[in-house]
Length: 518
Ligand code: ADP
Image 1 (cartoon, rainbow, N blue to C red):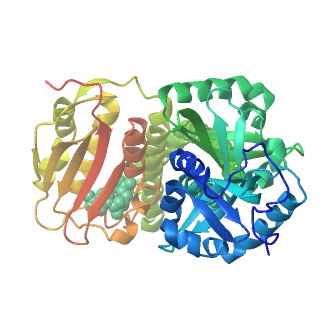
Image 2: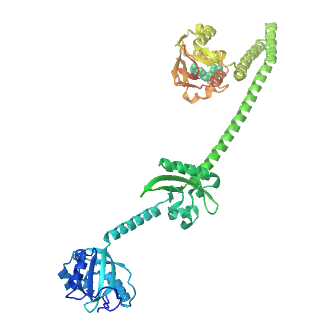
Image 3: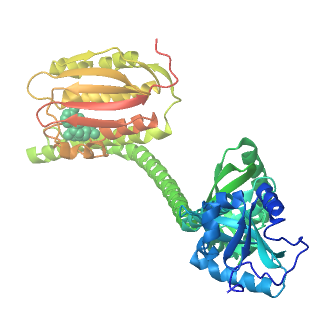
């Protein structure tokens, strides 16, 4: 029975304690125990013989209750085995080291104690002297710390990204999660202690060290898109977000690494594809420019060279007409008239074509040009058709723009000329205006003529495209193509808004920048 009980073997494990006798000198011993700062008891078998006030305070039982009770009643069942082992060590005379166990108080509370037991001579025999220190607070703090650590670990491991904790002072890895191992291909225990710059290519180490130090100094985190080197030599792209923290007086840096290699590769591919596309567009544009220039040159040369033989044909036909007048039959005379008219039409077409090809090749430098003055010149040029049609032309104040005065005149003349030409029965009314919109002037030439079906809005700006026969309205179909070319040479756009039978408005823009309006 005695041997069973924790801490006690009155016969072994002697210590140099003066023999205590129940009765005479036990009073001194009792006084000694009472003044002890820790909880102390003397136990024989499973019975307490002496308990000091600290022991009573610790257990919550009074002295009488303790002296009455079975000592094991203070131990939770799960700790009794440990107690038994300890007892047998004492029994074998081995030095029993202080050990931790729990005590259940009278109030049912479990408290942790550190106990040290020795065997002492007592009452002619031996008894166990136990000395207990309450370590519940320390144990609870340890438990809390353990829980915190577990929570922290769980959080680290739950993260979808690699998380590294770095020492702010040395830049060495203090801790990391499993994802780090996956990302770097380096076992966690090898990552520990690595310097943060070792995660990056060697040639970039200095740059990352500077960034790290600046971040620690300012206490502000950083977000970078960085190259990460795996142990197998592969390089990854990662978004690295760092934050600086003060943990218990120690500065640490938390780095979260997210693998974005796939996204980065896709971006890179897209960038390359774009570059390729841009290159092809540029090549194509150059090709188009070249072929346009060739065409222009061809149109110019062709029209220029055609003028000469055509002039000859026209003058011979005229000569024939004059000389043979009255000598040929009516049909032959008709043929000659038709040939003359055709030659005249062709002369007009060639002239227009020449004008078209000259917009790019013979344009003059753009200079500040007063559009109101240009407009006056246009009205003088169109005087005959204005009078003949009875047209009323009105015009707002027009701005000064950077332009080629001759080409701007040609542009306005073509538009106002068309507005008069494509009229309905009533006399044409044409209004020319300009309005500032942001960085440009928007000009408008509005008429009350026959209008245009929206279906043909684009077509009419293409060379030789006409919507009417020569008999209905004369023309070569080059006028608007010339307008477009002039506007584009000046850095503007041209378009039309109209409805059949309801008049048309031709708009064009010219840049307003770089010109002070007077
Ligand atoms: P042209 O006047 O020699 O026919 P343009 O290139 O100037 O050639 O015009 C092309 C076509 O656009 C014209 O044939 C006509 O059908 C249409 N158009 C141009 N201006 C007007 C307008 N103010 N009103 C109606 N239709 C127009």
